[in-house]
Image 1: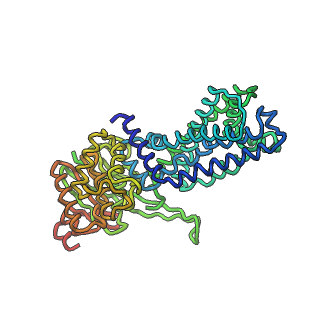
Image 2 (image 1 turned 90 degrees about the vertical axis):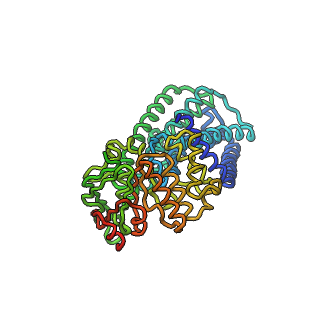
Image 3 (image 1 turned 30 degrees about the vertical axis):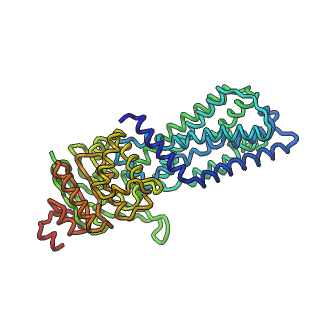
Length: 261
Length: 238
């Protein structure tokens, strides 16, 4: 069987499942859009902002770009969790299809909707709030691509940890709580205390959101540095993620999917 | 060459308690002890045992889901630990007692189509095979119903259809008729015998001596982690 045919069946199945949960879909879109508008309107009310100097864009433009593109990198830890329930995992693992291929094919729809959602919400927010951006499409595509690869690395890492420890609350907490503040998503790094700025430079989100702002603003003074650092970070996340997943798979083969069978 | 060959397989599970009075302590439970078994071509072997006897653990080892601590297990000459991918091309598996990876909002047919893709069966061939299997297992008119509408017996039959989908030389079944009514059980047994007569090897675990007697060409009893062969008379009084 061709890989493409296998991919299409897995993709179609995800689509049918997603469509079957219509209310969740509507609520998800509505809450995302309202969150985007809240930040945008809040930003519009600011008369002056540090982002005008650092990113060459208004606070509203800064916030809308941060919120709209956040899904690309913030979804990483949970990217593959829905495909790792104990029973489904076992049924997949007894087939000849590789587990990584299964994960990537099954989450392809999720990835596409994340990109589509980011683009859609960003354009809608910019239109509704009348925001101006300076577009650099090649850089934007590159940053989105690197962001997705980082997410895949984080997803592998998170799933590997989940297979071993049966929960991923620590990695989720680090990601959503700590780096939500320090990742340059909605809080400009420049206003943070110096020790917090040092931590911010260690997070992948910092490079992702800084790169996105460079692609949408006109401040591109250190673009090469940001792209190289984020590229290296992405590669490291992918390698660590693959190792963590391999370790997790070996762990469950030694111990059973559950710790106690 | 035997289709299934298990030689001196042992497995111990270790549990570390993280809460409660036993916190910090480790408990070991030996589930299988030097288990050896062979299943020939076209043979049905039933593995009889009580709940917790280690039947599912043995089925999981053969399915490549878990590794034995000691011993050797092979499917069609391929080692389940070191040649897992080759083994997976040669086994159809029914292992989960729960909903077993079926999506409740999708139809039985669509659920099987998904697994056919994972078993790398070409789509056109998969669709005709799914239709045939659903009919043979008494689900022909329910294939388009959502999985959540199925009764527990129908769910077991769908899981069996999934195990038979890839048309492999070895079929591993973990309590295939659990919760299935007697009429459907007979239908399943007839289907399994027909499959075995085509040269497929079937290893079936069960806690029912009646099922073991009705279905198995040979019956082995798994008790306290050790395996012993049973005669028909022993099975009938078990």
